[in-house]
Length: 291
Figure: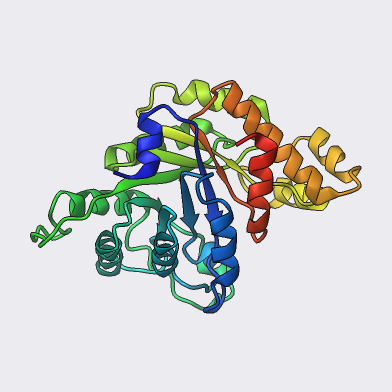
C-alpha cells in the first residue's frame, strides 16, 4: 500500500515535499536533499517538466528516489504526451512499483524554455485520472486487457484562491469521479482563504493537502500577487519579510508557523511543501513546523 495512502487512512497529518529533477544528468544534489527528508515526509513529488521547462523526466527521477528508500509521487501532465505515451508512462510506473500519481494538465509551452514546442493536450488532468483508473482496472483506453495490473493512488491539484471558487469545486468533483483520492493545492498564505475553502469542500470525499511555498523576498511576494493566478500574499507578510534582516530565514519561519497552525487546528489533512529551487531548505521548514 502507498505510504501516503496509509498515512491518510490512519488519520495522520500527511506531509509531502517537492523535488525538481535537474536540467542534466547529475542528480547528486537532488538525492542529497531527498535523503535529508527521508523519514520526515510521507512522500516526495517529482515535477514533470515544470513550467514547460526541459528537465530529466519525472519517471526516471522517481525510480532513483525509490531506490534511495523514499516514496515518490509521479507527476504527469497532458501537455507533452498523447494517450499512448501517457498510458505507457503509467504502466512503466506500475512496473517500478510507483503507486502515487498526481495528474496535471500542464502549463502551455510558450511559458517555458522551448516556446516553439508543440503542445499535445490529448488528455487533460481529468482524462489522465480516468485512464489511470482504467489501467488499474485491468484494461487500456481501447478496452484491451493487460498482462499484469498497476496499482495507483491518484491525486490532482486545486487552487483555493479562485474566483469564482465554485468552478474549482466543480472541477474537484469531476476529478474525484475520475479517481482522485487526494488533492495538493496551489500555495496559500492566509487563514481566511483556508477557512472558506474548508467550508466549500467539507462534503467532498478526498484528502486535501495545502501547498506551502516559502517566501524569499517581498519582491517575490508582490510578483506572485500580480502575475500568478490564485496566489494572494497578505500585506502583513510582505512587510514582515521586507523588514527581516535574513529574508530566507524569515520565509522559512513564516512557512513553518503556517504549517503548525494548519496541523494544530486540523484545518486540512496535510501540507505539500514546494521550496522551488531551494530543496535544501525543506528540513529547516519541517524543523520550524515541529515535524
